[in-house]
Length: 218
Image (cartoon, helix red, strand yellow):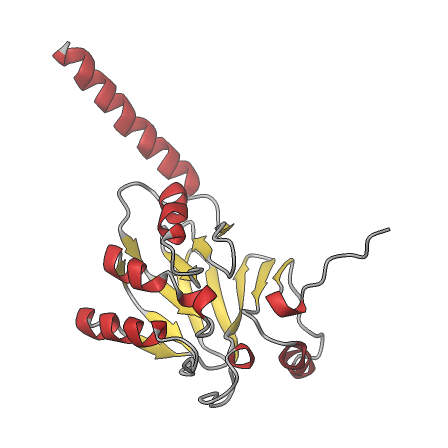
């Protein structure tokens, strides 16, 4: 019986390694089902990963991450707080307590309607996690050719309405591009389009919640 259990355990380890090796060939961009708000998990073929937003404060994001991350991975290399609304940053306090986080990227603009970002600041300070304030032109290199470039903000957004201050970024891997807009209103999207001669081009768009309208019913 001991031999059977041992062989089963070895078999499990081997298959975990095989699956892990196969995943190294792909970029994974996973839109987590957190209900209201956003949470997007990105894992490069290198194994480096990033989480954009974390959904509301109901621990759903922990369950969703547990379903897509390797069981033995307790690190997140980068987390991005696109803006300080509760349905986008609510899960970060639990994430910061559960995972070892390499860096937090934020706009510098804080909410006037919730205190979650203050709690995040406290935990970040306690754990001495580096905080980077997003600025247009910044690039996050996740390895193996995967890069995330900040498109907005390009100015100081402290005191702005939270949606308008959303971090906008584009993830590129080879000739594939994913555009993430937080909850940026049309005004900001049009502004960013005007800064690029060919507009904002991407294979996949994560539209701002307030800009998305369902197709008309026929």
